[in-house]
Length: 456
Image 1 (cartoon, rainbow, N blue to C red):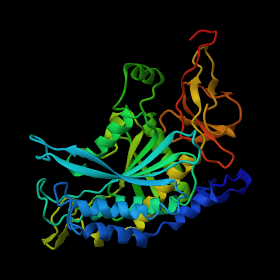
Image 2 (image 1 turned 120 degrees about the vertical axis):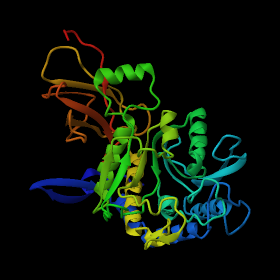
Image 3 (image 1 turned 135 degrees about the horizontal axis):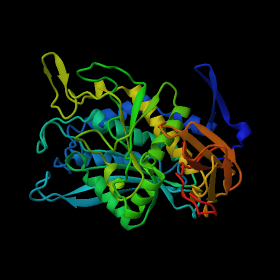
Image 4 (image 1 turned 30 degrees about the vertical axis):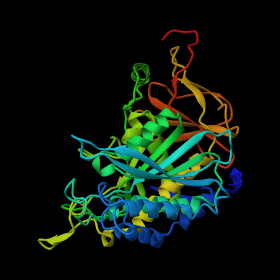
């Protein structure tokens, strides 16, 4: 993608409570977001529903019904974008074996994930960004592999989003590699995601972000009868599931329990998503997932990667894992006519904007530290330029008061050290790399810098 100087970035001015906020948009990313089609999303969702069930134990060899028909169709849809990618898009199955005595899948079977890799244009850029959704579906019973399990929202909405992003983003060039995944096995234990997380850990992939989209199409709630397609949730872990003693010691010292890499990704999604998608508030939920529930981001968190879940704000439990039927005048079942396709379009835009900005941004600054020696009401931050990729045009110093969940102030600098007239005891800080077009890396929460002379 062509890099655009700051002065040519599309500017949007928003007034909030009398204050003026300037929103900088990359016109090419904005165009990609605007190209997302809710009609195509609906077509994809309805096609997924047409397979009758995508239960993990359903038919694999029927061309029109069952999970096999679903993953074959998804692969074919992704392959349509190979020709426009300039040879950079590769689509393949990742096959794995799962199940056995004492497991929710009681017999050993082979399942497939569909993985589309859009290779980055810089051969020296080893960063990988993953967007994922699950292709399997389930109705009421774990072992009902023949009953109608439409799975329109759960998770046809996520798969449809991925197919739209493959279609649009394959025509563009990004420095980092983007991987689009439709995984199986989710409804019975996150098996497809576990397989991919283990594989990527063993092969030492440099995954800088993993966005799991699971149920992003329902805007109305059961029981409370809320109806709102202007909010979407991002779930993120605080204390990492994969935390060594050294990591725990540093976290406690710098009070970083709310500044894990997953939390920084969540904040990035909120800022970037709201910048490019109108009429949508990205609500950060500071827990890994909902009570008693799980998602495909969790296996990646457990392997030490930065992963979050994107999910609708209002859930309708009359539709989740229910056999389609009418009871007491209420329609049950996850049917396509109850998906809010405009809402899915907006949520797809949040994903696209986030991924595109990360894939174009410089590498993160390294060895970021806050000087804690000496009694002072100022704060000195130090960092080093990334060793790989393009040289950043500068860096953003992020600030917030310690009780605030979101960054409140951004200060642009060009050097590798700054002293600010704010006490390190009263504020949290972060550091981002930024290129000349305004594409920002994720924020790095600084650790302890090398001590200077003085007394604590």
